Each structure stands twice: as C-alpha cells, then as structure tokens.
Length: 83
Image 1: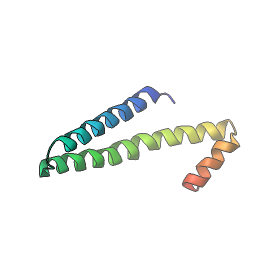
Image 2: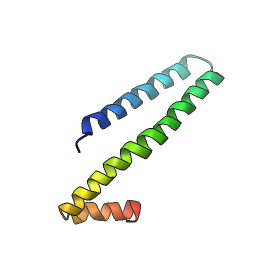
Image 3: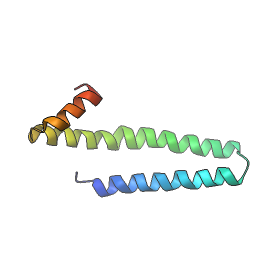
Image 4: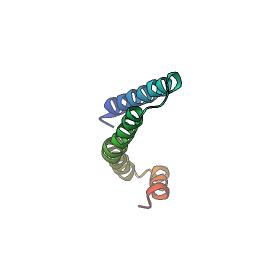
C-alpha cells in the first residue's frame, strides 16, 4: 500500500490522543468541555479516517487480491463486505 506510513502514523497519533484523554479523565472530574472534545475527535475519526482512508486501503487491497487471484484474501473481502 503506497500510503502505509501515513496510515500507520494516523493510528499511532489517535491512540496517543486517546491515552492522553484517558489519563486526563482519571486525574479530574469530567467536564462538558471534555465530553465535547471526545465527541469531536471520535466523530472526526469515524468520518475522516475510517470513511475516507480505510476505504482507500480496502479498495487497494481488493484490487491487489483480484489482480493476484488471491482466493484467501478475496474470500475475506466477501465475508466482510459481501462483494
């Protein structure tokens, strides 16, 4: 996958953000501002990363599996995505 480094880095950064937020929650009382930050970041992750980036990755892997006639990977795609 040509964008693997960028993709991995996005996951590393999101994981670090979640860990920092978890630490913040343990060290203080929850506040409405914190809840809004959590909501924003998870909606952002779902809409921007999963909806865009992961779809591109899936399309790349599906095309690669079809081109290489990788029946194991194609079976996985069919079971997960029905196509």
